[in-house]
Amino acid sequence: MPTVAPAHEFDDQTLLRALTHRVHSDLVSSIDAVSAAVLRTDNPAVKVALAGVIELLEQHAGVHRVLAMPDHDGLIDAAESVRKLALGLSRSSLEPIGIRLALSADSLPLEAERCWRLALAVHELVTNAARHAHFEGRDGAIKIKLSLAGTIVNCIVADNGSRSERLRPGRGLQMVGDLARSLGGRIEYGFGSQFSSFLVVFPLRAREHRANRIVASRRLRNARRAAPPRVRPQPARAPAVAVPAGLRSDVPATTGAALEPT
Image (tube, rainbow, N blue to C red):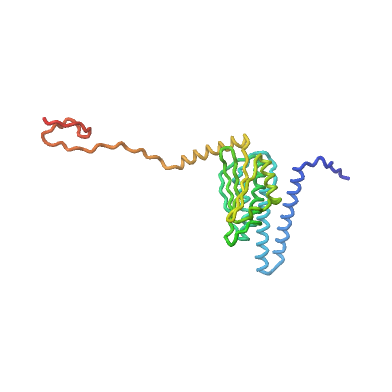
């Protein structure tokens, strides 16, 4: 009989990776099942409908891949990671219910696990906004802004919906708060009649700070190369002065020197 490893040998990361693998396998199995149904039907309308289901499942699978726990400790561009997440969320969850998602972010290298934690927080904030915000007839809009101020990372998720200022934060916001604290930071939020905003703020680590300084230096060099060449102003020349007859002409008129009669 095969031996079973003691429970204490399975750490949290192993269990999380096992859960992630199971969810991904379930999504792939669902896509395969719907694909097989497409082949079995002869109804064109059913084929189109099932193709839409397959596309939706693939988008959810893409979001799941972005949120998978990394298996290395290198640096990852958080802006690119959040961009992939935003694209997957927009196509899988937001566009079908009429909510636009916009992203503003510059390259921001973070350690792989910290980038993953940030992505989890962003995912929760975006899905929370889509689920609980009241747009009151307005076109729904959610914006993600990822920026760096010195050594402090600021990630804002804002929407044009409204929530009661007395709303008690639920499990989702509590989880985001836990993620922010695991990054050494905090979460701030505000609810209004026309908008809601959430801010995850945390400091860079020394390794991340060095990488971001290199990125900023490269960005500055590229901006200088792209800028049009500066044109140096030419020194102004004094206007030429006609020398009247009978006056000395041995001194050039452009010098502005006094001219005396001979």
